[in-house]
Length: 236
Image (cartoon, rainbow, N blue to C red; front, side):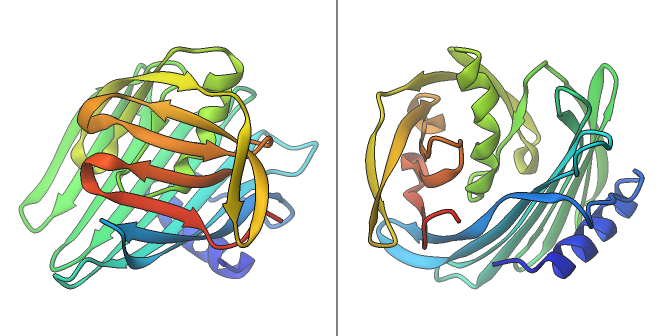
């Protein structure tokens, strides 16, 4: 589990790179934190730890979500370190950064500059910038990051049947069909918990996500890449 001190240090570093004001969430509220066990094709390959914090009541609305993914699929260790910054009454995405470290390191930084997101990718191949359309209600998703599905809640509550999404490491925007099943139960850490299963996308883009009644992510599957992430313990 990510400790508060390390969360703030990592977020501060990320926001400096993103050229945005440093977040002040020392007195913020932890919305969710925990750990996922990650499997690929049924074999455990690593873990994801994460924290989602919201600014304290009375201040500007802001949410910072960050995680650390450490996996090894047999071809060497790989880490992903995403940081997401949402702001305003409707908590729209303001900035994002992810660093992928494997045999090489790639960093993608995204800033909202209306009416677009501007994505900057830095890798051994060089530096490039790209504009990506900023749709209302857009979510950011990475193939091997589970906690980001927490931000599906608004689309579900609004009864949406399609969700715009950006996959930052791939530098592309997609539109995903959204369907929600009736509440059932799921076993997490030896306990049976109420959960809704959400199906997002079709074909190679399909994801299955299990959310608890508070919208916290319990399990994620991406069948096209054999990925499964399951919480190691129930949300606190």
